[in-house]
Amino acid sequence: MKGIVDRFHRYADDYDRWFDDHPEAYRQELALVAAGTGTFRRGVEIGVGTGRFAAPLGLCCGIEPAAGMARLARERGIAVILGSAESLPLCDGAFDLALMVTVICYLPNPAQALAEAHRILAPGGRLVLAFIERDGAIAKKYLCDGEKSRFLSHARFFSRGEVEALIAGAGLSSTRFTNAANGFAVTVCTR
Image (tube, rainbow, N blue to C red; front, side, top):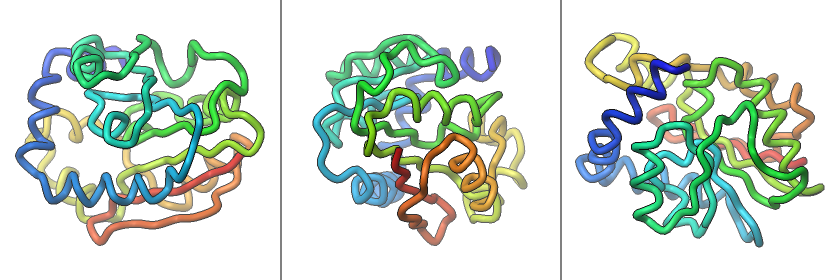
């Protein structure tokens, strides 16, 4: 985990530039995620990155392990706490919405991260989990290209069934599952 966190820290500006260089893909992903968030009072993005999802969706709080990414998220108005998804520095039941966008593919223990998301959600709270499906076009591209991506070449992609099993194992219920043609998938889970 330390290696990928260091990579995200050092190359945060390059990571963030991807969204400017691929505006249509970003708009599509943001729309899929936004469709799952609905209304909420207090939301947090776990693995907030540079704030590209939290800021436009109105989430004011984020958790991020990479200081370079956190700096850019703060510039977008997000209050960022340095921390990891597997050990969230947040109170039990404090949020009615938690968001994770392409985070589980980098985690050494995604089951623990989802258990932590469950812990910080209030009863009836939602987790919006976006991920790159292993059999989708995005994953296939990066699995073939290998080192051509300094970020996704280090990702571990999951199938929909594997994600559903992780969700169930964390005590969450998946209520809706959508995906784009390219394999970017979003599931809305409830506590």
